[in-house]
Amino acid sequence: MLGLALGVGVSSLRRGGTPWSVSPDRLLDGTAPVVLLDMPRNVFRVATGAVAIADLLGISTGSKRVIGPTGSLVTVAANQPAFDWSTGRRRLLVEAKSATKYGPYSEAIAANWTLGGALAGGTALGADGTAGLSELIEDTSTGVHRAYVSSSYYPTAAAAGDAFAMQVDVKAGAGSRNVAVYVTGAAFSTTQTLVVNPATGAVVSQSSGMSRVSVTARPGGIWHVEATTTATAAGATQFIVYLMSSNASSYTGDGASSVHVGYFNVEKVASATSPPSSYVSIPATAAVTRIADDLRFTATALAVPNGAASTLCLRGQLDAAPVGIQFLVGDVNARRLLYTNNSDTQIGTYYGDAIGSATAATGTLSGGFGVVVARVLGGASKLCLNGGTVGNLTTDPAETFATARLFASDTGGAACNGWIDDLVIWPLVGSDGALQAQAHVYGA
Image (cartoon, rainbow, N blue to C red; front, side, top):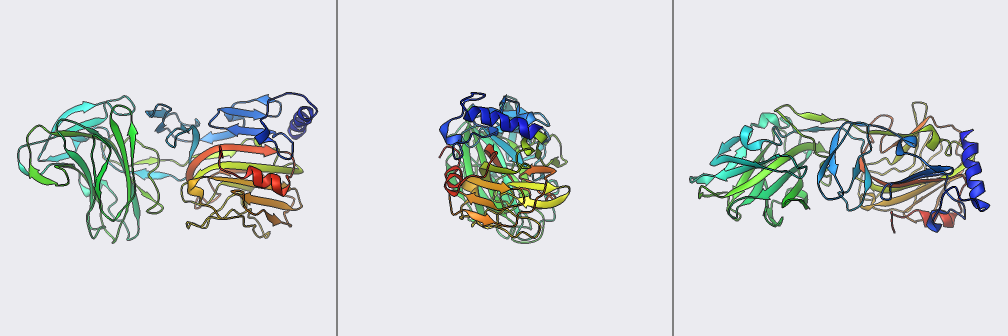
């Protein structure tokens, strides 16, 4: 009944009815979509009218902090959509990979870390408007001026090749000192260092083992610093924050110069190209786990792909991981709308039980993608990625999907993190030209 109701809505629109105004770029061979989730524009619709996002996506998540429209850090409650502005526009953040976060007392460093050559000053407001930045003031000794905790509070049994992503917020204090994060321990044959000017956000220096370095402005003169580094041996890890005189860690302090630091997280990630996931507060010494997001189509959204013919378009950005949407027949791994081979050369695949796969044009999914799958129940199906050559499948079985999961898989091993811009579904199989025209990154 639902599929028929959606179909009636589209038909009336094509005959001149106006259940919803559709821009020309949303038409597929002249036909309007029957499902639309447009995250940047905050538009969620079926053919019969506006709905809430919860009518189209079931969301099971833990609470997390994301970037709001003004650049501030905002808290999203559990089981709510995490609309994030960190990439410059409103997008739905999906973190289908869980993460264990290290970095004790992340919002009270000066009061709880061991200080060497430094004193605890006051606190400053962080990007979320709470007093989560600690002032570290250098003393007058000659040597290093730093804050640190035992390596037992960080991963103690890293393996060679394990990648760790860290994030920290910094802000200039008195004087003109820089701030550095030192990554050391038995897991690193050479200490890795990232030095940042907390007044300007400029990277003063970085070790060759520091990958994917990023410094982003946040309100209130705060700079959000990220970097990923890779263990070269088995052993313990340790992360230390230093005040720096230009690029020197050892110097005679003046007893007044300071920096503000806080919101410190470290987590194991897939590779040296991976960024840290969303920030999680760590109020004590124990590591904190951010649970995996589970986002699934509701019956309303799933009705059309389960119909006789449909075309689905997903636009977004993946964090160097394999799955975009996986359709499940019961608990069986049935279909992957978007799949990569875990290298920089990405492929799109409509994958399933004994039907083979169709490979579309290559593209870098971490830079943004648009993928389209057109499906005839029990007949030929098509795939197009980033406007490339349309791939064809001729043996698509007549399967009914029990669910469809975003950025996740049935086993969890192929889960990934990323952002969704929009999801569009039409009740027909589009022509090759129409599929290529829809398979583009959002806004292009």
